[in-house]
Figure 1 (cartoon, rainbow, N blue to C red):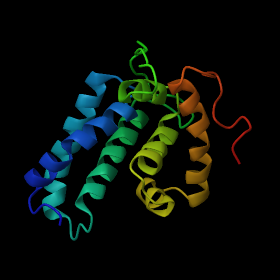
Figure 2 (tube, rainbow, N blue to C red):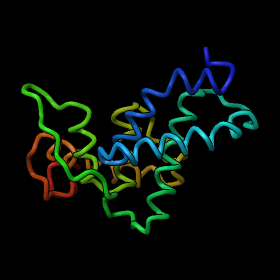
Figure 3 (cartoon, helix red, strand yellow):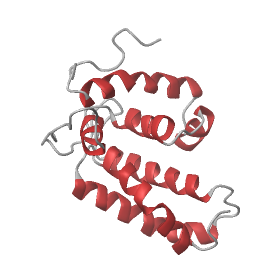
Figure 4 (spheres, rainbow, N blue to C red):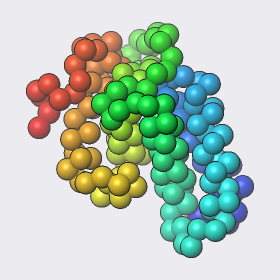
Length: 170
């Protein structure tokens, strides 16, 4: 059951949204907090006036990505350019990759690919829903998902210079 008010929705989703904002901002905590604040502020009125929100949490995740892409575009980045974020690489714990290391690694991936990776890989959205939210084709979503290789390599401290389209993924 979806929360009835925006306040209930925001309270229920704020932790997931912050982790998403941190991932999208490449681990830059200040940028993540700003992105989250803008998303919640701008979504407050939109939620009340939205005609019908079937999946409120998913709707809010889409708003976070919209704000991220708008900020990246306003910053003058092109679709193949990474978003400036924290340059301090967190230390990776033995036995895995923590969320901060993953967010830092995401900063090395172009911003549109980062948005697609967050929605598909980490939030488990369907390709067609991502395509609709971002206003791109299904083929564009599939192409942007090729950056998984670069994300994983950067998160594990491996091949950071690869762009995710260099072999291995079809």
